[in-house]
Structures are given as structure tokens and as C-alpha cells.
Image 1 (cartoon, helix red, strand yellow):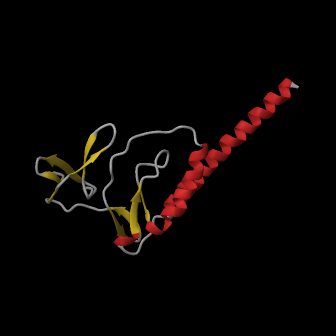
Image 2: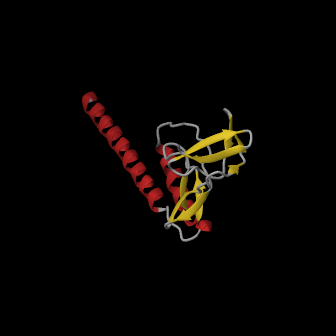
Image 3: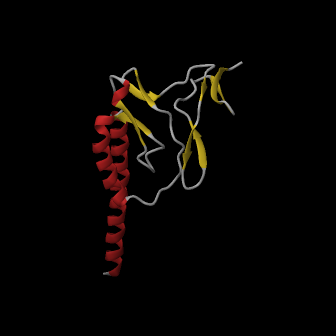
Length: 146
């Protein structure tokens, strides 16, 4: 009798863990599908928290639906925690919400982002792929790699 109870309890635990894993994949897929736009104003960056990354670029119309899905997931998730740096502002490029790209050889001022652990510099844009990012007293500048 005791052996049957243990087997049933382990099977139930296995199915609960499987369901949590499957549900997280559904949420991740919905976040990816929510990344669409026609204009910059369609885009929003939302930090859904662990384990869904450090900021997701999505269409603002999808925020409430995704938040509801994630709230349900967080009722059952194992504990998960990490600290994220603030991402660049979103813009619409090729019908996708992406990080706003900085222009080369132009300075961008930092805004200060403070969390419970540390103080960070946050910038309105990211350096283009293949450029060098330099931060000094004037701010952020993206330079062509030499």
C-alpha cells in the first residue's frame, strides 16, 4: 500500500513538472509571436522576469495577454531570480520590434538606472553590430571597428 502511494505521488509530481515545462514553452512561443509592428509606437519593452529573459520587445497590444499567461505560470514555477540591465528603447524595423540602434560617432547620454543591488548606466540605444562601444565622461559612443 505504501509502495503504491509513493509511485502515484512520483507520477503526479512528474506530470506537474512536465506541465510546467510545457507551459513555459507555450509562453516563450507567445512572446516571440507578440513581436510584430508597423510603426515604432506599436513597440514596447517589457521585463516579464525570470525565466523569460531580460526584457522582451513586443507589440503593446499583446502586453495584457502575455502578463496574464505569465502570472499563471508564476503560480507554479520553481523559484527563479536574476538581475537584468535595462535594454535600449524599442523601434520597429522590418515589422519587428527591436532595440533602437545608435548612430556611429555620436554621443548618447546615460540615464541612471538603480535597482536594489547596484547603479547602472542605461542608454536609449544599442551600438550597431560590428561597432565598438565606448563609454566615457561624455556618454556612449559607437565607433567603427578598426
